[in-house]
Amino acid sequence: MDLSTTIAGVRFPSCFMNASGALCVTREELLALGRSRAGAIVTKSMTVEPRDGNPTPRYYAFPGGSINSMGLPNLGYRAYAALIPELKSFGKPVIASVAGLCEDDFPTIAAIINAAKPDLIEVNLSCPNIPGKPQIGYDAEASERLLKRVRKVITVPMGVKLPPYFDPAHHTAMGEVIGRCGVDFLNLINSVGNGLVVDPERETVVIKPKGGFGGLGGTIIKPVALANVRAFWKIFEGQISIIGTGGVVHGVDAFEHLLCGASAVQIGTVLVEEGVSVFGRLETELAAQLSKKGYAKLEDCRGKLKEL
Ligand code: SIN
Image (cartoon, rainbow, N blue to C red; front, side, top):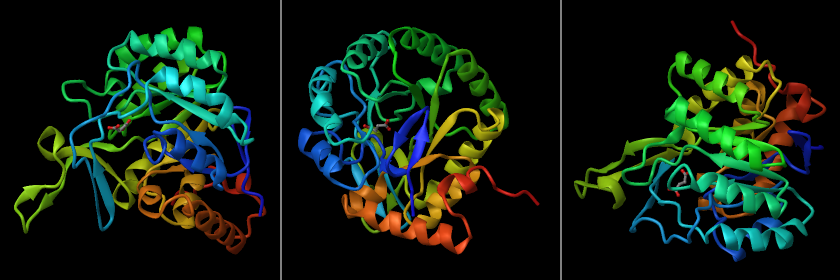
């Protein structure tokens, strides 16, 4: 079955791709994504200078999910700008993910990375793991200021990766900001920030940074991800493409994201746990699910979630 999709006018050969952060820091990891069945190559969120990230252990998987506090380890934006032509040779879209340690970093990085011509740029307003740096996506004014600045220098489709919101008032407020900033697509959601996993045997936290607090991913966050996809799908009446991220472990999880309004899905925890062969498994499972439900193609079920 054809699982291709379109995000902000750009065609993707498959609706499955890596979430920024999962196996996408180094050249070797990015090339492996290029050779895999992933529908796109998404870079690690880049900062101005290369970063080693937070002290280890900084990732821990448990039944039902994972917790991480990577701290944006990345090669720095100049290295990713230089890699983009090679990544584009795989014939699938390249999404450059832009972060920053302060507001001014974002337009600096966006201008140079835009000149390297990735197919799309994702502006990450939602990393929960930099000690002392709150998630920008929880500050509507700062988000608007920043998005308007980067929009001026980005000429390819521009998306924003948001943190999870837990109240309709926050969906509405951020929806209004997005509507004023020329955003072409949304990536929903980043990890659920500042969770805490405890090992009762050792009586310890499981990751070192921030006293054990970190971003939650995997199956346990799926209902939160689905709620955010659905809320923004409704706010924009399906007019802004959405990438659903959170809790996709099997094809049926992707199907649920599509029903809520996503056009594509990203995977994090399951990619780290299974490696790039996971893309083939997910394609097979989603195709089987769509056939079972009588859908001939992916678009036919997008946004079709029924209410009771
Ligand atoms: C990290 O590098 O800490 C995760 C990145 C993110 O959540 O945006």
